[in-house]
Length: 470
Image 1 (cartoon, one colour):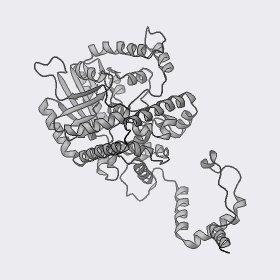
Image 2 (cartoon, rainbow, N blue to C red; image 1 turned 90 degrees about the vertical axis):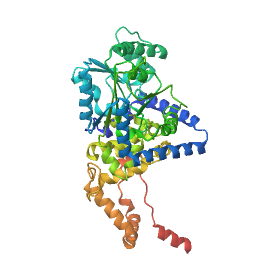
Image 3 (tube, rainbow, N blue to C red; image 1 turned 120 degrees about the vertical axis):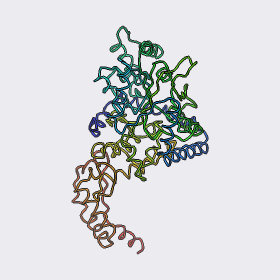
């Protein structure tokens, strides 16, 4: 999959949009403050991160066997399990289920994996309408956009923009900026779809191998409606979301909700272990689980990059990233923006396709410090930058060496040799001081477009020290 936009150009455009920058500034400040309020005790935060990180590491260490156990237990519970290596295969599986039940439209809960598959567009091509039931997803869907954040899809829009959108796109709706009224408008549209949808599609936050339980975390109740009202429920998730046992869920749920939205707990926590059983009053008659690979197995096989799969999709890394905060999610042109996208997308689709965003990081470390499962994001970005420029064919990431430039390689190779060779280092230092007046006064490259060009010293450090000694 190619990057939808040129990252550099899109970032420049975003930086020139004062409304966008204001919206993100307000939202990110609020999210960081709410998260900090949930972790007043720094020692408790570090213990929670240690525990959550250890659980995710243990899950990955036994990923293959836990996936087999998950499949077996789900099947015992009556859940039909499907395996998909690519998004295309996942889409075909979901389409087949929808067509078998003569679905004219489906209702969808929030699912980033379905965004990976571009499922809505695929179903539309086969005359099946897919309507998002999450309020944020619904907003960006009717505006023809994609989510700009993995937790809050419409975070880039303010109240006025949403009010204008509803008045323009929803028949019979008058302009109002009242939040409760806007929510009620969306709820009214969605309720009729819940009642008539043949299929409900959702994501999965945690898939428990021990019990075959699918856990969904949400605030609006739309996820519960999506998974219980339609007669068929299809859950789609990446293979890395499996956890060994139910006891592992509580610690992960705790750091997920507090890191994502600054809540001690979300309004709803759904646990689905089977279709409707005899005597039960609600629930779907069929439950399907689609387990998607889409490059995850390859990431798993690379021990250096395996920590990428620990992610629980809380979005904390985005909320603390100074680059994402200023340009927003759409500038990345990918399903997963921000720091997690910078390490996941190039591995899934190749550095040659999505490696440009690796430059959108100052390696300040904020994302790594915020991550509740201790993914070393800055280290992984550095590793991918190395992969992007290496030419020894020893790497394992798709598109290795795609960003390598000959002149840069020559410059850095020369720099390395000079700094390892004492006489050359001394000669270069001496030459720089003696020839400093020959340096052009104009800006020199991108670095000096926004920074003051450093002035070369009149004397070398060795000369200054000798003068001090004398």
